Image 1 (cartoon, rainbow, N blue to C red):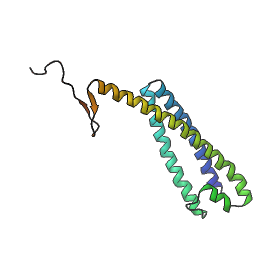
Image 2 (cartoon, helix red, strand yellow; image 1 turned 90 degrees about the horizontal axis):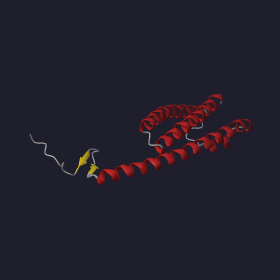
Image 3 (cartoon, one colour; image 1 turned 180 degrees about the horizontal axis):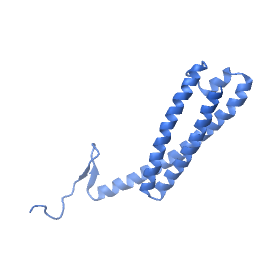
Image 4 (cartoon, rainbow, N blue to C red; image 1 turned 60 degrees about the horizontal axis):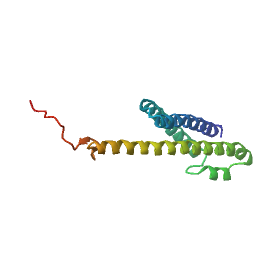
Length: 148
């Protein structure tokens, strides 16, 4: 049981870290600071890799305890009252941290989409667009000849 609690605590800590990274990402987008945005996205990817590892560890521990494929609420229904008193606050805190992260993430993604739309509109105004294979295509011919 202690291993399971420790994994949940690590997940809470990781989502706190992710929330901070996501907040910096949102601020970078708001201020149009692309280099900071890239840095935030790299940190976010590293956190996501850590989260995958914690998820695998959590699944393994759940399987060892006979809780395979069970949701946290289902686990609370089958553990003792003592264990429930220890686990329930952890589950609630984890849920809260996930929701906080998701809210900031949704704001950042929406703002990125708005900025991307602005960039695409500016490109289109100048006769350029991205093709299906993500290459930049210029539909206008240059004013000068490139022949020598």
